Every structure is written in structure tokens, then in C-alpha cells.
Length: 262
Ligand SMILES: Nc1ncnc2c1ncn2[C@@H]1O[C@H](COP(=O)(O)OP(=O)(O)OP(=O)(O)O)[C@@H](O)[C@H]1O
Image (cartoon, rainbow, N blue to C red):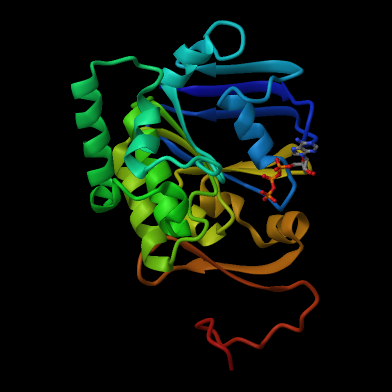
């Protein structure tokens, strides 16, 4: 299912004139500094912040003008930051809320919820109260709810928050394996480079670059947008782009021809 945001102006976050497209089955990362408008832009996609201008198409239909809230929730599942806070639901109850847009048969819904919990490795914690989970367990429960929703599009707002390094890989591997259309706001640029097919860079509400990670994550762009010095290399373990960072202005360490410090 394709996602197309065109000429998007939002009442918050300074998002002005944003164009963004996610092709069916693509995993696209949205990166940018704190406060650049990533969450705000995602909210317009999952129908919680109405655009002032522009269109949000999912599967060819306008989320705001054509689809009802229920129809759009059948297509778009969300793993938002703090998505389950404030509810004393058990994990199974929380995940079952992912079935709300479908109004399916209860027995079938229970099977879908159980399968989603199994998929994220949370089957053993189905009866725990959500608010008693660790940060990483909460992220898995929220992903299970999104899986249970069975939309063709997955929107994720910093899904690797609170996860240890192994759990980060596991979660992003899982998302890739779903082969859904996915758009994720990510802070960890090396994870974005390793997992995303393409990246969009937001700076003060404007999309300033997009493309393949190795084309986008240039030292010049990272200096301008994030205010850091960066070295773009290759992760010797994965062959994917790999960044090393230093504060702008710090004296560079002299390197040998192989890129090692002298
Ligand atoms: N409800 C709101 N009321 C007022 N300002 C808001 C609201 N929501 C967001 N903003 C502002 O819009 C800007 C963009 O916020 P947003 O949360 O989209 O940024 P972000 O790129 O996701 O940031 P972070 O990386 O820190 O999560 C910020 O300056 C924020 O304070």
C-alpha cells in the first residue's frame, strides 16, 4: 500500500510544504533533530493532526477527506511514543484494541492477538498490566497491537527508544520481515542507515534531503542539519553505511591511509 504526502502544511511543528512518498513494502526512515517536526508529520498520517493544506493519500485514498477514522485505522497502524500510557490494560487487552477497527468475530480476534504477541516474543506476558512492563517490553506490546491491527501501513515514532542494542536489531529485523509499507521516525542514524531503504531528512519542518542512506547521510548534511562532524564509512560487519560522530570544531585525529588513528 503506497503512502503519499503532498504539499503538506501543518498547524504545528513548522511543517510546511512537505512532500514524502513510501512505496508499497518500502521501509522509509524520517530523521531530523529534536523538534524538527517528525512526530507532527507522522500524526497527520495516522489521522490525529489535520493538515492546513496538502493531501495525505494511503492506498490512493485521502486519509482526511475520503476515509473515515475507522477505514483509515484499517489501513494504518501506529507505534507511537507513550502509546499505551495511562491505561490499566493487560498486555492482551491492549493488543486487542488493535482489532477495534475491524469488528471481527471474537474467536478470530483472539487468535490474531495471540499470534501478534507470539510474533514479538510477548506471549508469556499477555496477562501483565501494561504499565508494569519495562520500556523495551512496552515497545514490543505496542508493536503487537499494531500487528494485530493488520493495516498495510505501519507508522513508528522512535520505535527503538528504550531498547538495548540486541533488542533494537530484533525489533527492526521484525519490522523488515513484515514487508509492510513502513515509515519510522528514528534518532539512531546508524540504525536508520542499516535498515531503511530510503531516508527523508526534516529540518525545522522542511524536508531538506531524501534518498538512499549512503547518498543522504553526507558529512556536509549532518554538519548543517545536526551540527555535528561526521565520518561516513562502511560497517565492516554488515557492509551497510556507518557513521562516526564528533562535535563540530573538535580537532580531527590524524588518520592513516586505512582510516585508523595514527
Ligand atoms: N501540541 C503542540 N503544541 C505546541 N507545539 C507543539 C505541539 N506539538 C508539537 N509542537 C512543537 O512542534 C515542534 C516539532 O515537534 P515534534 O514533536 O514534531 O518534533 P520531533 O522532530 O518529533 O522532535 P523529537 O526528536 O524531539 O521527538 C516542536 O517545537 C514542538 O514543541
